[in-house]
Image 1: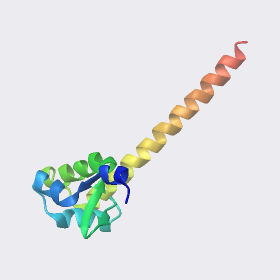
Image 2: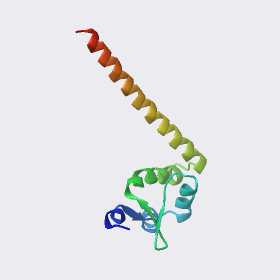
Image 3: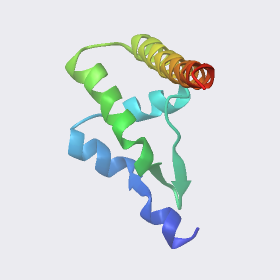
Image 4: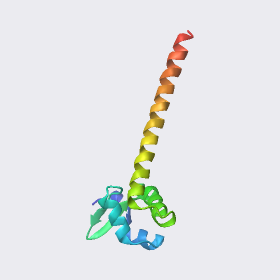
Length: 104
């Protein structure tokens, strides 16, 4: 594995110790397709890009007491909201384009 890829990884053990959580929670997230885990030399890692999402899941589960099914539902709904917001932006841009075309 190249050095750049390794620099983008966080050890799952370190993440769990830092956040005082069980590794089994991370495994559950992976089993349910919410995060991806890489294995290198029998050690587990997550990409740095996933940290904000992973920390959000930790807050949902441990701080707000939301179960895994609830986390899956919230994640799905937030993704749908983002898709719809992007669609609204595209439509507004198209509308603005046609509005300015008619003014010529």
